[in-house]
Image 1 (cartoon, rainbow, N blue to C red):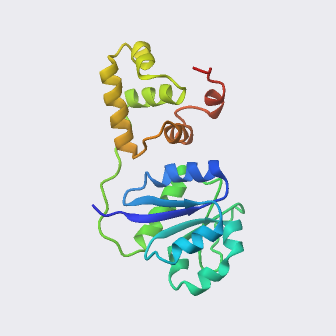
Image 2: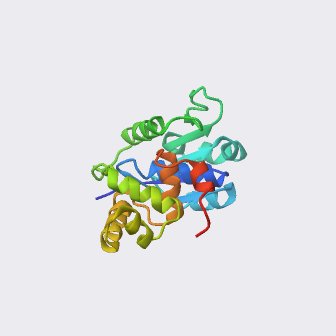
Length: 198
């Protein structure tokens, strides 16, 4: 099953990771690289073909020349702005940093629909209520054994649930799962910040 590659170029680590979590939920795409500055992005883009690009306004402003010389790159780009107008800049689609998850996903789908591509994978399954509970506890730093004791499950069942969560979301690390849980309102950032040291 083919997926369209997407590159994320955003300076802010938290904004970039949150955006990647959302983008990886869009059927038919996969984030293949992330950058926080222009020099490595420009070098990487020289050898890439049809990848899509989400880039912050400030990085875009640093290097508009690559968009002028790169043929169809503007048609494959979404500009991440803070102006809340949603108006295209220089013919490039844009989205606001304050846009909801649904708006971001819809804009990426619109960009995908405008691109020639092969049919993508089926939509990622939603997490079950039990999986959301386990994800919440994982985000709070609970071990498999602690989760099993809390939910009256066997450790093997918890491990199976965690594998299913990782498979459904395409996320393996605890930190990325935590970002996903925050972005999707499974847990608040305050709860994560106040968790006791294990």
